[in-house]
Image (cartoon, rainbow, N blue to C red; front, side, top):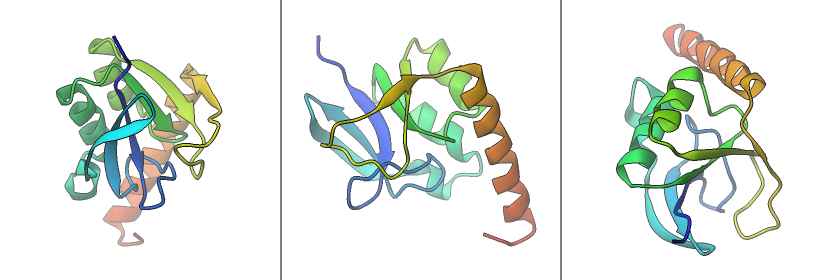
Length: 126
């Protein structure tokens, strides 16, 4: 069985954080097989909206741009048995990718980033 990879990208297929990317895509054998507007853009729970959608689309691997896997997102994906890797925002699909397995430091950093983004939304800075 081939891996179905879920991630978030912009128009130029560069990775961007779950909460900011323009599209959510599924990739199989290096080819984009599904593309939709990122569900996080219109959701109050931004990062978890992407995680839930990856589960709904039956991905078995998630490439999470650094800063994307807050604790709720990580928990959703882990419960679903999805393998998670971290990629650098700005790197592009189709190029040689550098990715790392997710660790607790990534989850803590992403959770902190999500809190900062939420505070900025509340005070109208984004």
